[in-house]
Length: 152
Length: 116
Figure 1: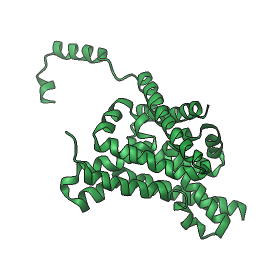
Figure 2 (figure 1 turned 180 degrees about the horizontal axis):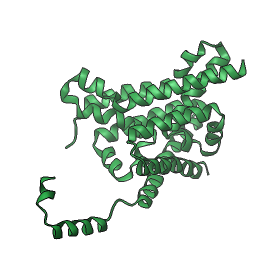
Figure 3 (figure 1 turned 180 degrees about the vertical axis):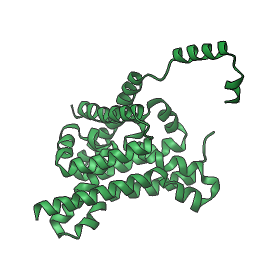
Figure 4 (figure 1 turned 90 degrees about the horizontal axis):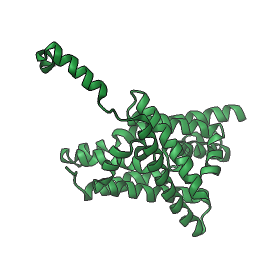
């Protein structure tokens, strides 16, 4: 703000003009990239699911192990510093799949590691996963209640 | 063909997340909370099951699929064991994913150090 005050009127006008021409991150580009990256992560998940089904599980039974494998992948790529770079590039394409849920657990745990294993790693792991669990579990609980009231 | 449907459905859910993220002041955490709760509600309405029949992992891997996993466990348990399944059922199907996320998350956090 101090810098702004020192600008002359001409400089202000120029700054306004320049800002209006600055290429902003385009909505279209973001959506296409999110679609492609998110779609590819799900395609990989389908491959893992198909593997477990080929080992004799039903698609429903295979859901848990598939989630576990994808979580392992997301967590490892976060540890290696790759997933956060993917996140900058792909936005929701990387944070909406379950690999992004793993990233949301590992990334803050690593970042706050120097605050210790209890208050750093242990507490910060749930910075984003916590709200997701609180509202996800409570919504499912409520849906169960409504379902029970309707059907009993 | 299941790969194509997984790509189409999974990509569409992520693109919707990006749309919400770009057009509203919501952070990724808000979008994830919105998605997991929406998935839980759509599951109760019987809609999410149809999406999984069509999109397979394209519907289960994105976060609304986790909401479905939570709700399907509750309804399943309440139908099998009566009212008190409302508590035990929440983690019935979701426990694998949740425990995997916590344990693997901790292991990776112990093994690696922050980059940059």
